[in-house]
Length: 217
Image (tube, rainbow, N blue to C red; front, side, top):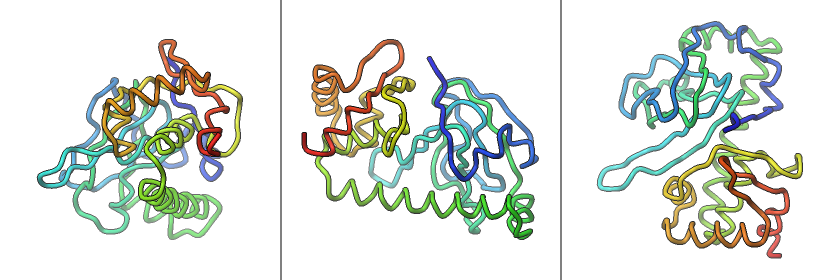
């Protein structure tokens, strides 16, 4: 299974992430990094692998809110003064993740240099992506939402190679991300495969042609 490979235009310059300081920890596939409701004194930077964030509200099932890859931060809400984790973070595959103390990151942001500007740009971009995701959930069909999620996981939502392999996600997880049922995800995934938009082979191959679903074919 290949690692999730992401080139974030704002943060790719950090490379190993060493300039961020902190300690690098290694996580196994499906290992918890933190749980919703735990104290939030740190944030995290993904150097290798990927992370799934999920949130649970009272009387409702857990919902996947983000799938993150290399060069992504998570747990950054602590910078805004949130004392507790708002989600549960789980390693999506074997991952190397840098833990950064909240106070250290706030010091970096106050310096107003190239690094701090990149961090601010990344955080603002994250807010925009979240708002876009919510808008698509409200206005798009379940089939289009699934296509959009797969393209984003493969980083093909704008441009990129013809085919990208990502770690295989269960239909249950995809259903939680899309906001539909597992049987419907199974139906759409089979349809995408028959049309040559995706392929299963250990991992999940996503083809650039999947964008046709968003264009109404």
